Image 1 (cartoon, rainbow, N blue to C red):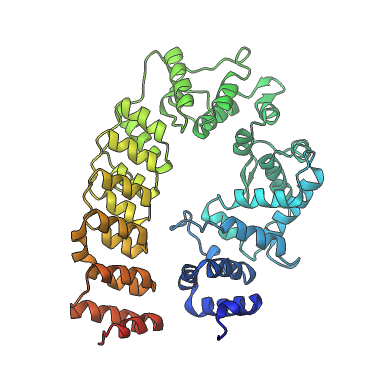
Image 2 (image 1 turned 120 degrees about the horizontal axis):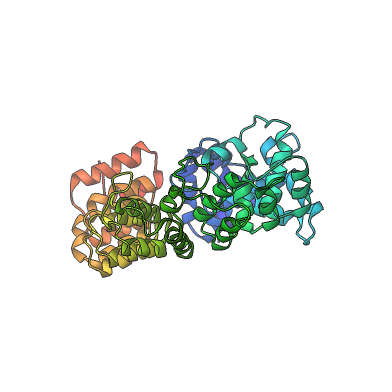
Length: 460
């Protein structure tokens, strides 16, 4: 029996994959993961070892579209752990911080635990922050103390937090690597840090308290929202009657009327405060609908249900002029889609949106409601989502008639299984479609797909 590529030593196999990815390009190289589980694992390992995602991260947009791969944080961990001492400053900064935090930890957390936590937080930052992280240009030397302080707050490592405060760092501290200290302190429930932040020699910093209260509402933490609102309230009551519009000014009507949260309990807490301080003044229907748009983007299903009950418009348009159910379908927010359907959302183009972005469960849900499929088949094929294509065919056999028109997408993606699936449903005899497939395979240099077409007797 002859030797196969899978029988080769791992290092040689990875070297072959490296040259294949370099030759084919990153997008085509990633498709090699589809061959089998061994290829899937080996391709990811090759990306790590040869640092093949660095150039991708250097060119990210603010909000990556499509999102970062699922192994992005693991890739960053590998890069941070293995970067040479003369390498990229941002990566070395994370490693140095993890070392210092682990040395000062009092809860037994080790170096690798800090690396994992910090890399996960970093990869949730904006694309611009990730671009800067992989830039060879070194950050300013005096940034390290700031990064260390925010990382300490993020990981709730007490000793460096106290040291940072003693050096003058506050909740307003911002690290382009790890984000802002205040948000991390709120998420971790670090009440000692929050109390120090809110206190002054004269009592309570009411401006900072207002700003922190708004942030707590947006984060959806009932405990932090309640703690912040009630902090020093006896000596420094809220001046809510003033119609102050400044973000940093005394708490105004806008704080209680215009703030949105992912947490229904926080929403009800704020509503109770509105009743207490403002009578029965409520946000307008327009405002409720704007809040609902945020829910569709973020996946806040329970909050969406409450807003719809209060009068938000289920078929309003998002900022990109899409109906809210389309937004939820694109984002993959199943529970939000269910909520919008319950309230009578217009489902036109919903299956297409879910199919285009590969959200199989949402497609199943919509098909159970007999939502029109329209151009969903083409969208699913173009995205390479074979499971969704099968769902669509099982739902409506007549879709097989439209299958040949989507064949060129399978050529471009080198998706043999998808090609065979479409051909099984409807063998095409249209010369134009055959010519288009052959032309794409030839233009893109896809030898394997050309071979597949020739075996079927397709010639130009």
